[in-house]
Image (cartoon, rainbow, N blue to C red; front, side):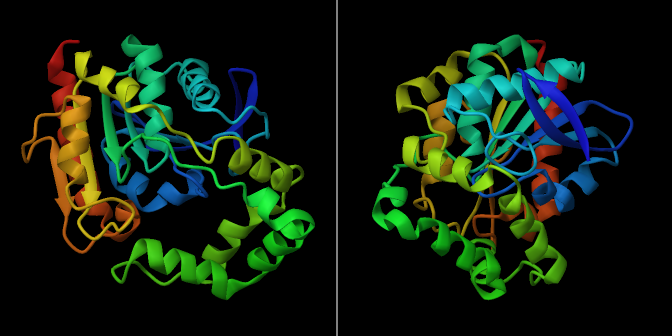
Length: 279
C-alpha cells in the first residue's frame, strides 16, 4: 500500500497508469480506493489515475471530524502532495459532496468534475449508535463476519449486471473495518454527520464555475429518483445534453462496477472537454 500525508492525514492511495492527464477518483460511503479497480484499469490506458481512502474509510488514518469540509481538505491535500496538475475529479455517491466542496474551495486546482451516482446533498443520520446502544459493536461484528450479509448488500446496490462477489471480494470489503480505530471512527461518522453532504445552495455554486461538469447515473439506481440525472445537472451547471448527462441502462447504484466501459466513455468525454475549456 502507498501512503502520503494529505492535509496532515496519513492517507492511503492507489495509482494506475503512468502517462497522460491525471484523473482522481473519490469513493462514496462504505467504499475505498480498491472499489475503483474495474474503472481505473480502463482509464489507465490513457491517463494517470489515482484514488484515495477518505479518512474514516479504507486504510487511511481515522481522523475526525468526519465533515464534508474535512474530507475535502484531505482530497485537495492529496492532489497537492502528489503534485497533480489540475486533475479531473470523478466522485461516486456521497463522495460527490467531498469533490464539490474541494472544487468550490480550490477551483483552480481542478479541471473537471463528474458526479457519478450522486447529488452531493446531505445524507440524514439516524442515530444508529444510540439506537443500538451497547449492542452496536456486536451487531457490526456479526454483520462483518457474515459473507451472506456482505454479498446481499453488494448485490442490491450493484444489480444483476455485476459479477458475483467472490471470497476475495468479501474480504476486501471486510478487512478495512477490522483495522485499529475503524469501529469507533465508523460510529462517530454515522452519528455526527450521517455521511458527506452539502446544502443545495452550496452545491448550486458549482454552476458559476468555469470548469466543465458532467453527471452519470445508472437508470435503475433506486437510491435516487428517476429524474435525478437532469435535476443534478441543472443544479451544478452541466447542460442537459448527451455530452454532459449519461444514463446507463441496466446499471444500479454501482455503475462503475457493473458498466465500467460506459462510465469510462463518459469520463473520457469530460476529460476532452476539460482539456479544451481554457479555465
